[in-house]
Image (cartoon, rainbow, N blue to C red; front, side, top):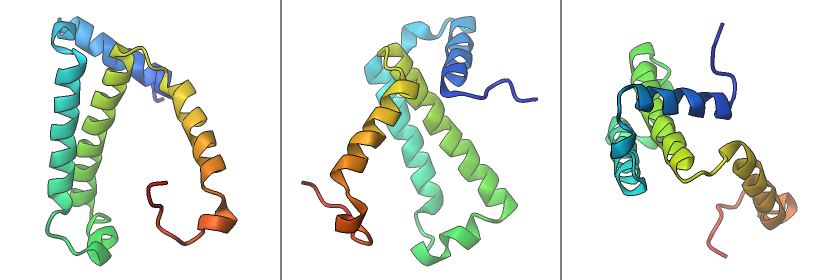
Length: 118
């Protein structure tokens, strides 16, 4: 059975992991953002030279899927830790942001069109 079934529970596990190792002193927002950017870079590196049309097939391969899952998880962990340090409840904030985006991007107006800055 999975111990983590929500964003809040996962955030609690990540916080406990840092506290158990006395790492919270290193988890200031700037350091967490830099770590997050580094992990996004590692994720991007996996895709760097693969043609866009081949990525789904390439990352369906078990070894590639595992590597992508590891890097995506690192990104998520640092993102949740940053939100926790900044006292941002993503379980609350993300649905609000999605609601705002639903209002801004009306399907009948933007369907099939790549979004641009408004």
